[in-house]
Structure formats: C-alpha cells, structure tokens
Length: 217
Image (tube, rainbow, N blue to C red; front, side):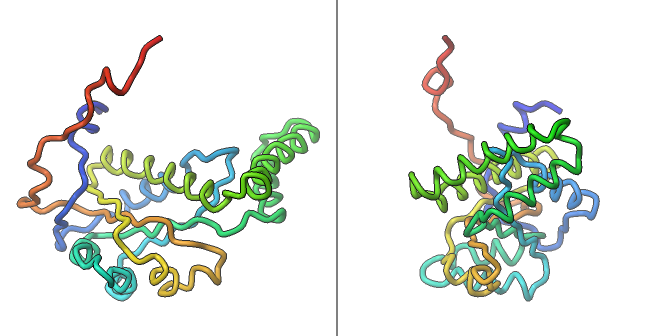
C-alpha cells in the first residue's frame, strides 16, 4: 500500500453506484475502524448506526428536508450509510464500565493503576462538563476523530466515501429516537462505490502547499 497515493486519490464521492454493495468481509473491517478508533482518554463516547435497508435509508433521507435535498440521491444509492452519534452524557456508571472493560483485558497490573486511570479520565470529563462547560462539543470532537480514521481506512479498503453535514440533525434524532437512547447524531458518512461519471473523481485534489501546512523545527 502506498499511503500517499491513497491520500491523493481519496475524495468526497458525489455519485454512488446503486448496483454495487460492500462485501461482508469489508464491512467487518469497516466496523473495526469504528470500534478501534482512538479517543481522548479512551472515553469512546459514540455509537454508530450502519444503515443499508431502504426503510432505514429513508429515515436519513427525511432529514434532508429544508434545503438539503442535494444529499438525497447520495444516501439512497450508497451501499451503506453510517450515522455517527455522540453520547449526550458521560455519567459515572459509564466511566466505571470502561474501567472494568480495561481491567478485564489486563490493562491494570496493580489496583492503584486502575484507580489512577479512573481519576485521570474523570478529571477530563468533569473539566469539560463543569468548568469549560463544553462537554457536548468535546464529545463531538471525539466523533470527528473517529470519522477521520473511517475516511482514511475506507480509502485503504478501496471503498468510496462521503462525509455529510447537510442534514437536519434534529429530524435525524427524531427518526431514530436517538435522544431517548442518550445519543445525538453528529455527522453522517455514506459508503459505497463511485459511478464512472462522478465529476468529482476527475477533478484535481487541491491542498495548501506543504510549506504552508508543516513547519519543521
């Protein structure tokens, strides 16, 4: 695999072939991308809806109302559409659940290490909740971190992708009853395979010059 080639050829797909479906093997790898993504203090404040049925896709399409109809066909023709959700709260029982999972996998050789890690994670969660008062935004940052891993990983797997913010997320929350589940839709990613006439695939990738982006010291 040539990473630079993958980065140069990955793009925001504007037209999906409705006759091409992602294989079960590739879907397993995509699920691994979602599960194994990094997050701040390993807080993993997310849940994902992997949508493929016409009925479930229609719920996402319903959220294109109010000026977002340009995304309707992309959602309908994609093989799968992932609704990326963030948790609305990070209560103590959830943090303890994470701690127990880590303990079961052998991350803590001593009990004091487990206690120290819980204190550290709780510090950052409470910092954003009580002092900075930006916990929802901090959670969204983690979801976008996950999306970055998903987009790059999908490109490595040869799967085309389109991240979308052009939806009414309040409608999307209602369609799937997300708020009642302690979740909030953050963004949506359509996955599949491009059509041959997708105009965006033929356009050159334009990024700022490297010397404007990276400073070596």
